Image 1 (cartoon, rainbow, N blue to C red):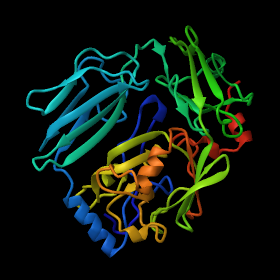
Image 2 (cartoon, rainbow, N blue to C red):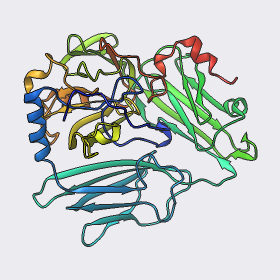
Image 3 (cartoon, one colour):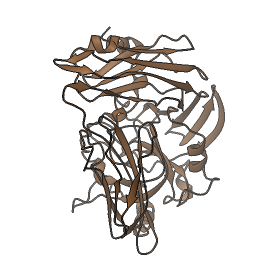
Image 4 (cartoon, rainbow, N blue to C red):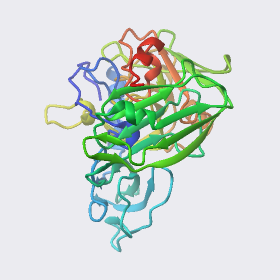
Length: 417
């Protein structure tokens, strides 16, 4: 899985919270050198190779491809498999509404039963087995087409959810906004904590809101979208009129120290558990900075090719289809996740990955007594992982939900009102 080389990663254009997400894979380090997950060293490489040989041969394809926008509401959505059969496919909107669909009689394909909605983020999760019964998993997210004369904002978190103290309100517009002040005036975010909340434009398509410090635990945040009729760009008008509320849960922040190879999980500033970890290797350091959990997968695929780690044949240096307990920390592919292929001895003693943070785990993600399972089960979307002492640069504030890495003065300077 590793050859010690740093390689130029794929350019990832992502409106993360509008549903545009890259294929699951690991990365860290500088923007010119995205990284991904693996062990390091000779014995570790052998372990990685052995794990790869045990992988399922089933090859799942989800269309539209992960991160697509303007997808057809009629004909685009489909899941197919080669060298295997589909066992389960689920499709949901970003808000969690299930979409009916059916696996074909030969179990080689799946399609939704009816027409999709316009301007909607859909998430697809598929599982297949090969002839040996080995499972493969694939996840993708895409956004359907909207009318040309209107814009919508896909937002996170969802209505009624409970999230961690680091979760910003992030809105990704499906059209470039030139009248930023008018649009921002049509959006309000408030908290029962009384904290001042300010918006920051990362681009013409993305507007995030957060307070100066993390949200107060157990507070309630309200997002009001009053964009119906607001002109966002020349001849392009908003259509949304919506109120969203979500709850802030307990204050949980986990501090990863790449120097000591440990992670301290804290609640309200008190350490509740210390976990041995394996972060990015010296050749492939993990980003530093405050990173917010944006997605959780009990199992997912990680393919080095998606972040620029390829062999001489152009294939991914690794392709693990059942990475357990994976939690996304960045758009570019930084994860904290379980690692069943690494020797027990690496955790807490040596940094071996391509940029992810690895926790000891078992194949199949069904052992609740592993560190990987414990952390996954005790984490919620919006929790913060604060990575320190890696020797790498601080993650960009717009790489995921990571605006906390921008100071308050700079954040406020990005407001249009």
